[in-house]
Length: 217
Image (cartoon, rainbow, N blue to C red):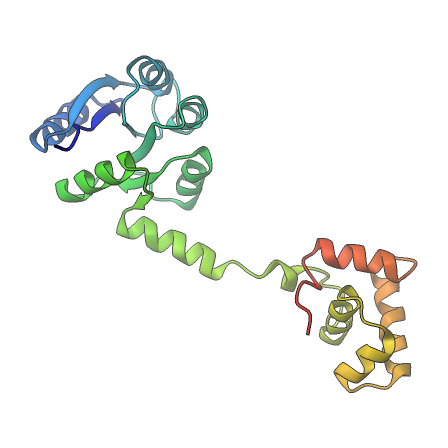
């Protein structure tokens, strides 16, 4: 027989808490407590040790981000499911960094909320469709940090620096890029000047710190 999921609801609106409580109880979820702000959620979570804390984010008297961070740090077994009206990226990623396992909007349907509570209780991460799209778009559109590094270099100089970071000699670089050794030496000199480094070793350190040189042919 499946154990009953124990939930703590945190929201500053009594009417919303009551409605959510009724919904969860109808689905067989045990609501063990209610809190109206972050500090209250932290206190009750420590006392009641629920399986899941449903957390609003912006509440008078203490926000949900700090409460989520404290709960996940002090009681890692407790899963936090954010249920809020805020859909902006700052709120989503702040909640994720604080340790929330799930993020739903308050407009979510009963089935979606029930599924999220069960998933978070089981240790899974779950996000509503819109939030999942935001997360996917964020990581899909995130520029490669290697492309953003050293904007003062030309594309060819970046190629040379990549090979320097791989430990290639000027002769090897010339052969790889089909350049003369003199041209490679000129590129290397320009790179040293633009990066304000004295030698190859310093250039390699800077390049590898930026993620260059990780792939070797």
